[in-house]
Figure 1 (spheres, rainbow, N blue to C red):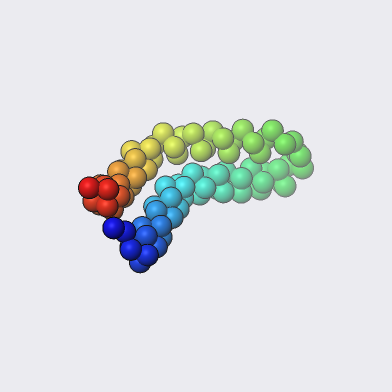
Figure 2: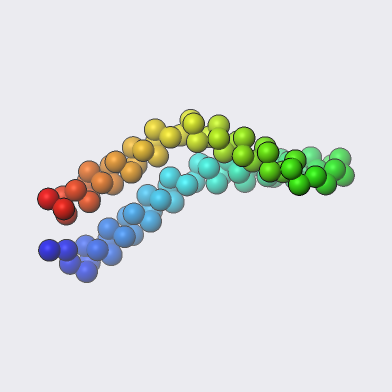
Length: 87
């Protein structure tokens, strides 16, 4: 049976793993937005699609590079914490 403490620990660890999985994508979007924002401020070009397309492209590149890392984190969480509780 799962105690309250174990449930809270599992939830905390799941949130931490989710944050670690999202971090590369969020950092890529932040950096792409910062660079495009600086370029827009320097050139006085205010186009909405100019900010959207580089962010999506950067996130797709980072996702393709870090997908194995994200899957590894999720599998490690399930192997170490969830499956022993179920079994």
